[in-house]
Length: 407
Image (cartoon, rainbow, N blue to C red):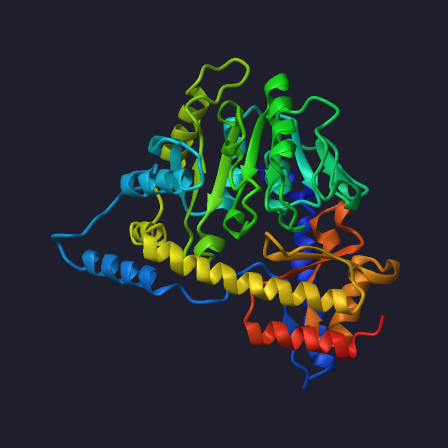
């Protein structure tokens, strides 16, 4: 008899965005003449740059010609793109080999799928607040127990709060897999060299693996802050890095990312190269490689003109972030992030909970954000706004908040 995977019934976080949609829909029904400015979702809005578009068009034309047509590609990714990514890392002082790079259709699926190469009873540690995919994939994979008081039993939650600058202390107990996201979604916090070194030392002492999500690394402008965990000594023997073109170049819907699994990575019961071989086997078995149209677009991003154009996109969004941060500060709302990350993490005023402030902001200022509690228990009392919007909408939102929001 066929049975479903009951672990899906444990999932909780799917509540967040349907609930936002429900509340905004009801607002629109009550206020047919009002226009909402949506600054909640982390989706890019600016078009792809000319260098990228030219490359994508060229590859489409190649597929229309029998002499240049290509079918299945290499599951691990186009060799030229893998080398281009290795060269990109060298530009900020990190030496990786091209064959340590595995190209994919994005950081989100890799963040979930990477768990499959580790033991079913692996203990997972996550930051709280947390990007939901790390937790939900652990739930689906049967690595958790019941959901109680806003958390899953079996997961180790590492508190991120104002006292620790929204970057956690190392776990007090032994864990096997540690998810770290820097710059962080949702808080916008960026880990320092010293903070990452503490986790690397912990991983070595406990045969743990760090899964480092650097999808927003291109937004770091402070040269003293690491853009890759491999900038820290010892990371190549205990860390996997996952990243993406989504925010670097506006590829959220185009879909292209990568995962770095170093040759030297080894854990208990394995030899160097074995973990990498497992990921290679997983990808070769369950993935036919990223689109052969999109991968040349990735190489275009990493070209000299492509990187220049991408930086212009990043500068645009970061200028939005400053407008949002300054606007909220002007009305007395405490903010975090938004300096080396495209997210502004705001403290809800007057002790309001996240959903109370969501309703107040929407009803008074006609601005939609994301309640912090949607990212975990540690997000209660906070609110996330995204800089990924049109400049005119950002200015409109901040003007409305200053004029219409009554705290």
